[in-house]
Length: 231
Image 1 (cartoon, one colour):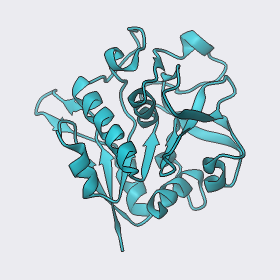
Image 2: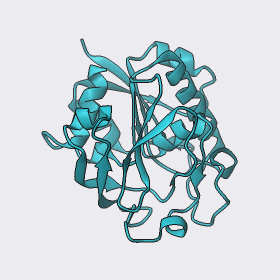
Image 3: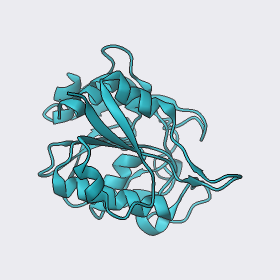
Image 4: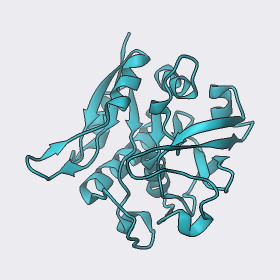
């Protein structure tokens, strides 16, 4: 039986004709493991009804959260923010947690989960941890770095490793104060939180890197998407 997986889209683009969009890598990743992707655009008023019709959820990456939601200081490096998307995804994350819906939260998605639980974000990582680890090359280009994973975590079991030499990284914000029930379980060399678990929510996996960009056979990204369908 094939599984229907909701994938959140990016914000409403207002240049020219309005549209919602999403990098094809997310859609391709869900299809690569046998799922059927269903795109979820901002603005839906009843996220619990959406989740009731789906088998799983991917909270995708993309632009930054608005400072009013993230608790981060206003910073000139903030880009792609959209209150409509933030409100929808925060409500969707809270509904997924309440329902125990199988969820894979990616990059911004991890940040959404933390903020939904009352946590906050750093507004611009280089101001906090310096540049010893490149968490992105630019707004248009990913970087790569190593990640250390708590050996006893469910994530380590899924990927069968407690260290990854290289993950695709594409962000300039990250968790500052952890939310209620949030447990960090992976870190970059500069101490930035790279994955989390949520108390009482074993169906949720949240990573700060981009597994949809690592879908080679046996790759960590493919294992995470396969695990989402198993859950």
